Image (cartoon, rainbow, N blue to C red; front, side, top):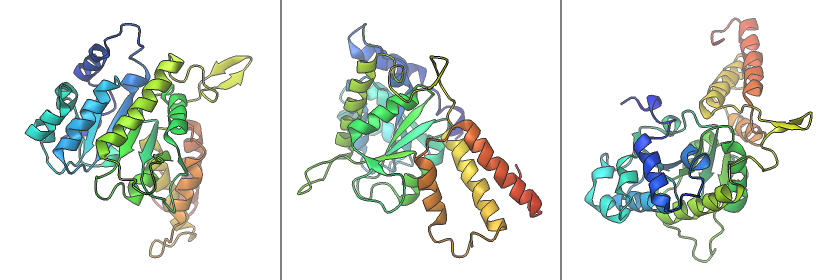
Length: 289
């Protein structure tokens, strides 16, 4: 399987299915609708995968990515097809990849959904605020919403790989939310935000910077560029004896949280990698690439 070659781009059949499912020629089912991927990490139950596909189609989305599902051919599973209930085209077009890193290839920004408080990782926000951030980011390229396993949710490593974190403020006395229900909540909020703004990101503050009275979009770093930056930076810190690989504690986790708050631009990632490269050169270490 070569997931990198096809995950970042919208599947043509899925995009067409998204447009035809809307039933309203005036809805701008492009831009954010085709640039947003919904990622389910290690889903256990085929029925939940099918129900998630249905949730996406009802809101005009079509890009579903499955990371190491428990049932390898889940898009063909009878229970999944039954629960898709007419959204079997979205289910059939789902991309299956082995890791979250593969699912996020080419994504400019990603949002992790979690049901519990995390010591590390980006600070959490409510879905409504999170989708406003999504609108700003989707103006620059693909974005991803990441949902965890039904039983254990997302691992800390998965959360730290994402740009932002959201928590659905359910009833604290009974906060058990089904995976497909969580997908439905976020898809609904995104639909309202995208349709309310026409072209996602076009009229929201923060979508660009002002120069001479004109808004100019600043290219943001992709998820894979940022991950390479972290590897490069970690190698440099080890070379400086600032980070002990045998006892790393939470240094890289804290640095990830720091950078996650900034919304890294491509040029900023290049600056950090340039610093790391120079450190490694001075220390006579490999890893300047």
